[in-house]
Amino acid sequence: MSKIYILIASLFLLTQLSFGKTDLRFNLKIGESYHQNMVAKSVINQVLSGKNMDMLMTMGGSTTYKVIAKEDSIYSMDVVYDSLSMSVATEGFEVVYSSENVLDTNDYVSILLAALKDITFKIKMSEKGRILEIKEFDNLFEKALVAIQKLEPKLRKQLEDNLKNSFGKENFKSSFETITAIFPDNLVNEGNEWQSISLLNNNMPVKITTKYKFEGQTDDLYTITGVGSLVSYQPKDGIYNNTTPYTYDIKGDVVSEIKLDKSTCWIKEAVIKQEMKGYTMLKSDMGTSNPQKIEMEFKVKTTYND
Image (cartoon, rainbow, N blue to C red; front, side, top):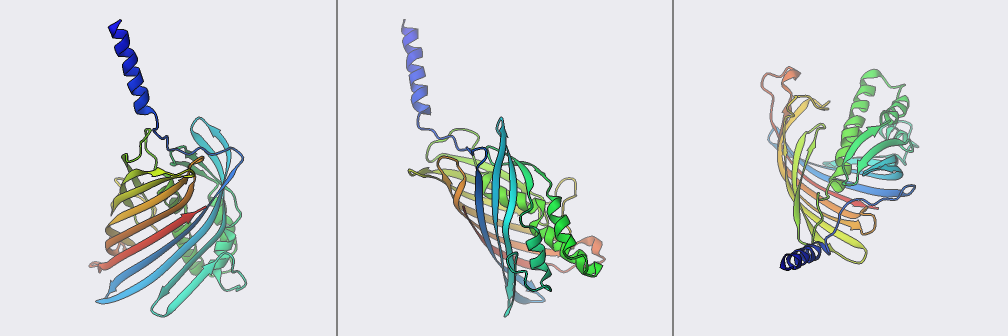
């Protein structure tokens, strides 16, 4: 009989320990659309020939995600860019491009951004916010490149490369997972911490290691914070989508605060701050026997809301 009491007491204790734990994962509804607005402001300092040069780059976008189906723990979603923009300012010079500004027929960048709008591509995403598959993404660029066919080939190729570098599949995945691939594997209590590692293989491959913390909840929101580090790296296979003539050696820190809707865990608000330092240089296959190292410092603040 005493063994039965011990068993009952143990089960009661386990029940008490698990009570109040939170299961942080997406809980999206089939047929519903979810929105995400993003603005990333980057202050970039470069040292060229001993001279400091500051540049402010801003990128923005609005995206709609519609949940088409769910199988087991995997969501199938249709994704559409609603608007896209970017600007660059340095030493009294500024250019602004926007998908909403296509009145100037010579503004080919804005024309390209406008061509990326309203074309559906598809993703599969886990409940834990990892993108598992991206399909029909090339449809965006096929339409965009038609819009600049009349340009001379060299300029057309340059615009095509810049477009894919800024808005390509890897950039979409890394931007999306910055605020979605944040969930723990297990149930958590307030104050619990867990680690997440992301490898971003685009023009500047980086490894980001982040320690997240469940800060708590209100009636409507969950709050998660993150503190992490990033470092550029060379993928083992030596192959990645770097179409620029440069390689990078960069290290830095990342701080984030993310607020989630309590019923769906969709991102209501998020702020990601990154500070990075290092250098870039021409690739060895560019024919430069002694390439110059260009010292660089980045400060990036990215804000998200729905």
